[in-house]
Image (cartoon, rainbow, N blue to C red; front, side, top):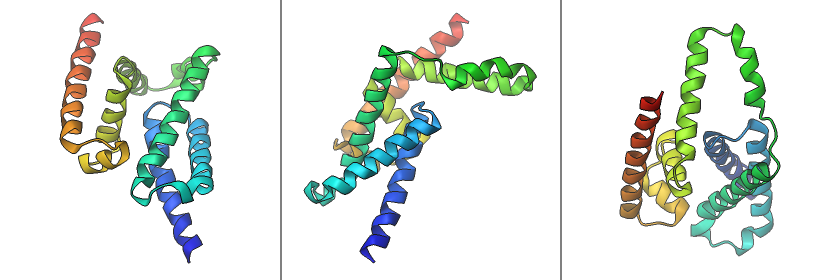
Length: 167
């Protein structure tokens, strides 16, 4: 019974972490690898984690691995799969090309924000988490989070408009 509920818990958490990592711009395989590694680390260290801190611990481990991967990519740049696919866009309908460009513009603007603001915007608007859920994940006060999310949203909007005006 305990094994069954642990499996269900890890599947739910894994899905949430996977969606978060994908929204942060990771490839499918990288996101799966980080989720698997995070769950493995949780199983090894679960006895040393306070029960009320489990979700924030899992989120923090996955986020740190995300940052590690990004640092590694900047040290050893490689051609991303998305860049290779851009050459194949010639055969796609124009609307699909425009959608992809707009998504890239959004991702580029998001990358200009601080890592805290990036995380908060993805958690709030891409994953649709409540302030209470984000507070539990990040161990931050709910009211402080609301302020940070508002500032992040305003900063993103301003920078995105600047990028559009520049084009």
